[in-house]
Length: 347
Image (cartoon, rainbow, N blue to C red; front, top):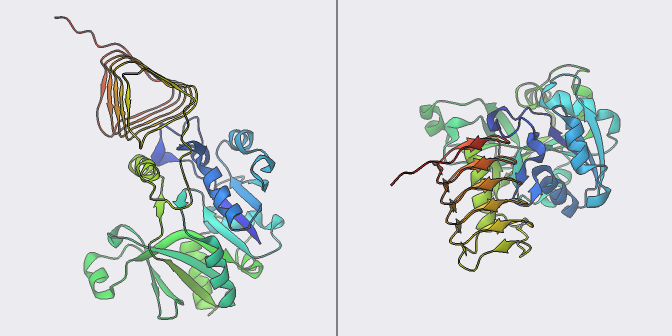
């Protein structure tokens, strides 16, 4: 069994965070995001993993290497140009010689890959797709299945009245299991889509195409600032079954600092007196000076927060410098090495 992770996106919706850090390795808690997918695959017994990359591939390789540090084997294929989801899978085909599980490179999930693969094999399917239920299906393309979970059709963002008639709430979760013969249906060196081209072709050819509907399993696409933050909130509240924040005490905190049980502080952090940290994640070597308040936020490594500063529901990039008494309001996102000067208060 092999795996392909489609990690070639530019991370445009996460900018400015992804200007220097490719989306596949943005930190989620205490790990590069892609490492969480790799560990989930390893838990399912899959250690032969191919990464399809495009944007800043050297940076990704420097972080993940050949996978040996994580108990897997990683191979890299670098797209010469954007090739679409199916096109990227085809481009990785020279390394594929077995059934493969294919993942979009921005999905955080605790879906049991072993069960997905077992269902695929039981159905003797050429292709299987994982579906997840959503509260607001109008924002997505929907997938209709029959009582045996056989895929019937794809509906691209239907109107609300159509959704009401159809009574469908299942969307593509960006996880597939594909047999090697599926590769033959994808043209060479073309931008080609799973959703709009390959999957309709499978249906037209009447191939065995089944779904696995994830019930009560965690799933989120981290590709926007809001969902990136939400993924951290869910990690801190232990909503994701197979991932845990490895909390440690390898940081310095003044006795009067208040750090709640949900928050995660990485090694090398220095926390001043009177600081309050609530439901937040601080990466390595973050400095928070006296009296500052950090709540519902994610602070990337090497950043310094001045005394009496107040940061709420925001993401602060690498090695930023936030001055004394600065207030950063909800939904703010600061790129790497941002400098905000002290707020001068005269009494």
